[in-house]
Length: 184
Image 1 (cartoon, rainbow, N blue to C red):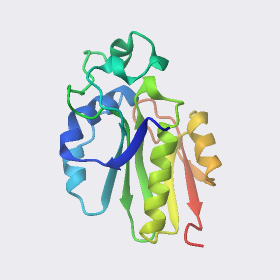
Image 2 (image 1 turned 90 degrees about the horizontal axis):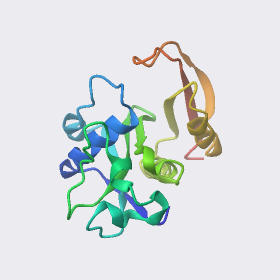
Image 3 (image 1 turned 180 degrees about the horizontal axis):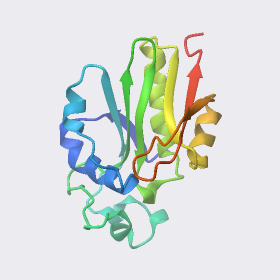
Image 4 (image 1 turned 90 degrees about the vertical axis):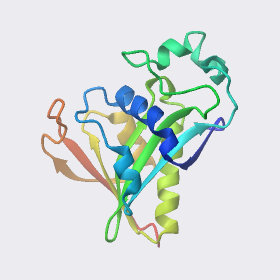
C-alpha cells in the first residue's frame, strides 16, 4: 500500500496502538501491555503509518468516504490519533525465539482492512526475519479467519496443527502456521 509505510513502534504510538487493538480485537481481555513489550529484548513491534501529513482524519483519503472519523472510532469514539502525529492503521509484533520468529499479533483498523496493510506488516516481519538470520516464522490464526490464512499461504506458510480452544473470547481453535527456509 503506497500511502503507508512501516517503522518500529515507539512509546508515543501507544495511544493509537491501544485504540487499534480494541478495534481489531474487541473482546480481548486483558489488553496487551505494549509498554512492557517495548522493553523486552526479544520483542519487536512495528506500525503501519500514513506517509501523508494529515491535519484531520478526513485527509486520509476518499476511499473511506466522508464519515471516516465515525468509521475509525471504537465504541467510546476514541481513535488514539492526535493532530500533528502520524496516523497509524495497524501494527505487528513478534518475539525472537531461539531459532524462530513467533508472530504474536497483527492488527489493522477495521476501516483499513483489505487494503494491503496487513500484508505490508507481514512483509516487514519476513524481511526482519531474514535480516536477523532466522530461518522459520510461526503464528496462530483463528480457524475461521480465511482472509488471514489466505494471506499467510500466499507467502508460503503451511498448516502445522491446531491449538484447541486457543482464543479466550469464544474458545475458537487456532491453526498453527509455519514458514520455513527463509535463509535458504
